[in-house]
Length: 407
Image (cartoon, rainbow, N blue to C red):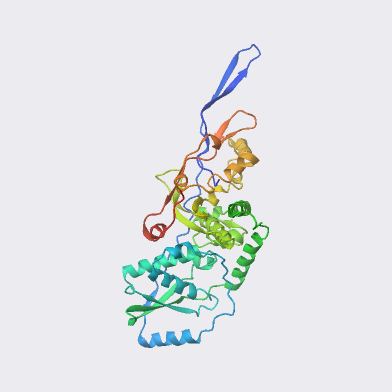
């Protein structure tokens, strides 16, 4: 379910039973009220802006760039770790886009110095619309394929800078050089903490079990460990680590352990599955309980064998939402009771786990969503009708055209 607040806590209209009176008669008690409406955790996706930072170089500057590339000595070992067997978005790119993706990854491989430069050949004219489309798709594919590049995804001051010399071509293609604009602050310390946290998280997993069983273990442990970062969502703190796998596995930008919002949950889940050899990726779109009022949101798509399934770990994470409910409210004790009931909580923690794209797109509660209070007086549901609509326009839309469908 969801940690932030749950959608449309509705009291189901029904006749709750007959109470026998001392004289043998009956008294029918009927309740038809609506519990407070809660806001779904949507609109919590980071707005990843690519700096369109490019520069035309002179031939002299290009020669200096070449000399710098020859003189550069890469680090003896990399702190960037990802054991994925396949990177989904990379596999969907065109040959030209793959070259850009590969160059960007090389340029990001030594962020402590930001002296690493890479070169790619573009079949597009530099600065043209078609070039930018290729460049953007390669960039977004990179950051969503590689959650370990959390500092790039959330780097407020970290972006790529590319250079081109007019007329500089090879085999009829334009020569483009790319590098990070500046060294990444606290890179070594943060990357080590991230690597250690991921290793520690997976330490207790039984890899002899099936991939589905391993994924369930990761999902359940993740939503138990992570707490939804309300301040980031409420205050729209766009550049906070809570939007990244680092926030979910280590801490947010304010030093609070295991804090994340939707993309933090999704990127952490993706990264952990990648380390287990399970193919996983990101879905970006809009979500909420009102089809006409949705907010940007992120969730996952995971592959088992030949079949894809979708999971929203953020919405599955019911966490401790009753702490934000009105304790003086008429229904508070029942809301808290439902959230802490082990059987019902198990359902809430998995209601959007390994579902089809159709079910994720439009979730409609059924009888199994209902909770019967312990005093047998009330039935109510804590999973309202909701929507997850994949993005169709802009940079995210182009990326989502490549995303698989869960049948």
